[in-house]
Length: 204
Ligand SMILES: O=C(O)CCC(=O)C(=O)O
Ligand SMILES: [Fe+2]
Image (tube, rainbow, N blue to C red):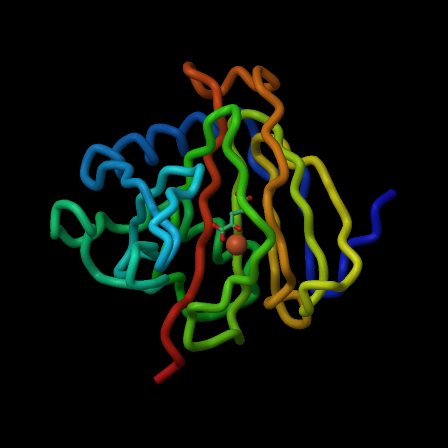
C-alpha cells in the first residue's frame, strides 16, 4: 500500500455512481453559466493542457499577468455561478472546517492533458484544507511534501474518489502525470473532471 505524506488523505469511492452522475449534471450547469476557458502560464502565455471554469464567490484564473482569484469570469466578465449544494455538503462531511468553501475550480482534462507538480498557495489562509473530487477517467496523481525536491508518491485516482490536503499536507506539492483514457463510462466523451474546493480569504 502507498503511504501518503502526512496530512494527505485519499478516500477511494467516496461518491457512488448516482452521486457522480448528479455532480456531472451540476458541472454541466456551471459550464453553461461560466464556459470553460483556456488558462495560460504567466509571462510565457503558454496554454496549460487543462481547460477550466469556476463556481463560488471567487474563481482561480491564470493568464499572462499571473495566478489569482477573482470574482468574475475572465472572458464574459460575469460573476461565477454558486457552488452546487452537493459540493457544499461534501465539504461539510470531509473538510473538518466550519467556514464554507469560497472557490470551486473545475478542471477539465482531455486524454492527453496533465498538470505539473505545484503547490496550491494562492490563498490567503492555509488553515482550511483543499478538498478535491475526481470524475470520469482514472488519472495518475503524484503527491509529495512541502518542498519540491521531497519524496513523492503516486496513486491512481478514480471517478468518485476524494483527496484532501489539510494540516501538514496543505502545501504538499502535487500534480497529475497522466490520464488513462476510456477507464470510466461516466463522461460521454471521455476525459476527466476535477473539482477543487478551497477557502481563499482569511477568517474575519
Ligand atoms: O486534477 C487534480 O486532481 C488536481 C488539480 C489541482 O491540483 C489544482 O487544480 O490545483
Ligand atoms: Fe493543485
